[in-house]
Length: 70
Image 1 (tube, rainbow, N blue to C red):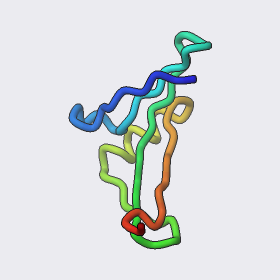
Image 2 (image 1 turned 90 degrees about the vertical axis):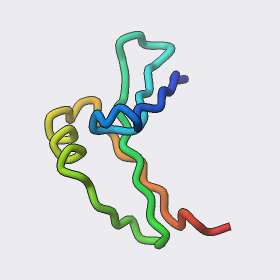
Image 3 (image 1 turned 45 degrees about the vertical axis):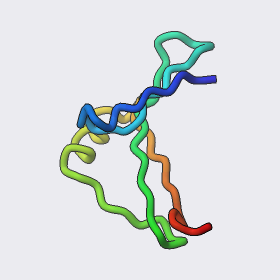
Image 4 (image 1 turned 60 degrees about the vertical axis):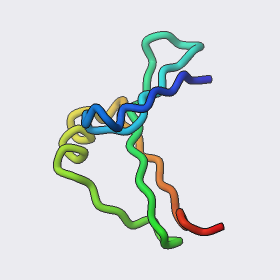
């Protein structure tokens, strides 16, 4: 299990900070991207891309497709 903290307002290069409850010190920095289409296509900001490249061990991507469908 993970504790998840919303970091969107911090403009830090990712959206969610997930800390492991079972393994203290283990965390994931999750960028969430969404698209209205069924295919996973998205754009990244320069800051997001820079953060991803600088933090390959902790950075993760969560992709949501068909985001506005019922």
